[in-house]
Image (cartoon, rainbow, N blue to C red):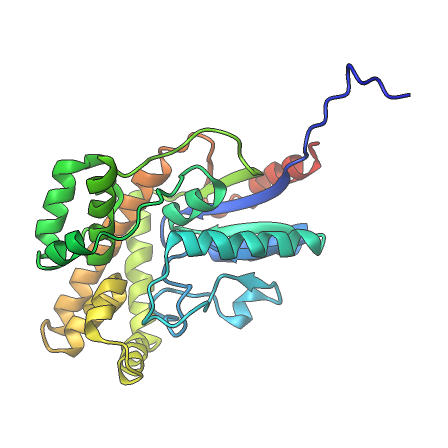
Length: 309
């Protein structure tokens, strides 16, 4: 006989493993190891790896590196189109349900904090429609002017935004114009039970890894990749919006900067991006931080998490 007084129905939340951290910390490699060991499948949380053809420049995982583990949210659409965090949330949630229905564990891996927080519900996207009149006015300004305005009006968002990305700067100012500031973290009912594993390296070691990886990508055909994208109709302007490798390679291929300038600017820009990632992630006190090679500690933590009811 059921005791209706004591019966309290609680919905068991689906368990998700999240691997995050700064660029070049080895997230993709670790995610594959975890997926193989714990019967998981991987969902990418990278704002540029969603685009087809942006492979070498974004460090997109190769089929060989996947080692047979299914990956979602890679090569989703043409880079001519803009992909929003709201679209990411919708498609990634479908991927989570698909993985769970297969009896496997979803593993989210990436460095785009805004995508991760949007998906997990720690950031609620404001339902602010495009302001065409405001956009026309803002479009006339330089990225430096836009960033200065955002810094003045919302210092918090200015700390985490790519100050060279005109599209994101305009959208942030559009939200600020409507709400007074870009909404930050929200508290409330969370949809999933999430283990957040962060990978971290000392600054000096991270800078070295960034530099080594950059030269490896250049040797690996990154310049040819950008030439091919442009030949297929991706404008230099759009490449500027896509940022980092594509921005500076576009400038180099238009003879606006030399090869050495391109490498130096890229090294600096990627390091700045890593600092913005660190700023974003350190707000979340639920992240448990490890060095990339601390496999035993990470596996033990995952084991305890998956076995807990």
